[in-house]
Amino acid sequence: MASMPEVDVAVVGAGVAGLAAALAFQAHGAEVFVVDASDRPGGVMRTDHVRGYVVERGPNTIEVKVPMLAVLRDQGLEDALRKAEPASKHRFILRDGVLVAAPSSPFSLLGTSLLGPGGKLRLLAEPLLPRRDASDESVSEFITRRLGRQVADRLVGPFLTGVYAGDERELGAEAVFGTLVDWERRLGSVLLGALAAAFSRRSERGLRGVYSTTEGLGPFARHLAERLHEPPALGATVRTLRREGTAWHLSVSTEAGGDTTLRAGRVVLAVPSLAAAALLRESDARVAELLEDIDYAPIVGVPLGVARSQLSHEVRGFGFLVPRETGEAAGMDLLGCLFMSQLFPGRAPADHELLQCILGGVRRRDIIDEPDDRIVERTLQDLDPVLGIGGEPAVLGVTRWPRAIPQPGRAHVRRMNEVGTRVGALPGLALAGSYVAGVGVADSFASGLRAAEDLVRPL
Image: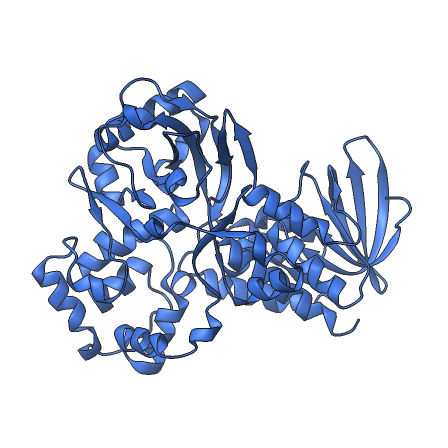
């Protein structure tokens, strides 16, 4: 690193947001230095091959939205994508001990058994309701007000369990469902907004469905990193960040014990909010305070390999989610289970299934500290009544992410607006990551592109 004391851009973090930012700067001819404390690029995107199984340790699938798709095409990586099997559109929700098919389209809401007659009538009445300001509402309050209690509890709550591992009573409506909130503001109706969107801008939606690659998402991140002219400096930690004159100075330490100071005209902090707060404290203590207060949900992943002959229930489709009320009533730690070998061929040996079990979240934060054997025990206790596992499945490792998924609350939009204003006043600095623009991989990727766009104009 001593050979690169001065660069156009320093990107701190080699997760998907940082890689996106670096590729965008590189496309504009900038010299980019990417630094990350991890041993591999990709952040939470990690894939291991264990006993014939392809196991994701972080995200299991990705959506491919327009900003990401454009970059993948430009980098020649679109062909590496593998769309999930058609069965992936079949998703299930655990209700009264039985897996019930979740609605797969707005029209299927009218036929789902998850909603009773009263719930369906309440849903259809939504366009007749007066509009209100939802900026201070939780998701639960907003959806209940617009679409009814049954939709909030039986459909939206489970969905947020899968995406945020969160509690719909605490997540902010404007942060999580900004598009729906905007539909109410502009059109006076969520349903009318959805109908209008269904008949417009079809070409701007990116690829339909969910994706991975044959090798998994960890190698996908590696392929992105390989498109950089200069590979990321891994095993290196940025200790301090300060503005001096017309540039930023970053003190960087390596695992080997080397220390250097790097000078960069522009910096993108593509790291979790707590790490960004620590680096920004000297420049703006208020920004550091705002970022420190962002809550994260812990996640524990327990992948299991099971012979089909061991299962008394058929495994099909995407997987299932456990709603908050169901989990609390049954004392379950399990948030859900993805049927990865049903989504992507080659993820398990012949005649076997790969079950990716997910536990923790805000519902059971303390499970992150349980020993492995206790976590596995709890996983099997929760899973067996649903799928009927006979014998001992192959436990393919226990993965802990203490701060896995940001939990944008009611004040998150206001918080990030203030952060954006204050960071915008710091020359040559931008933020990117899941807490900035959405927790999905595609959203983090887009946040990296936007960070680069904000800073690339003076190049």
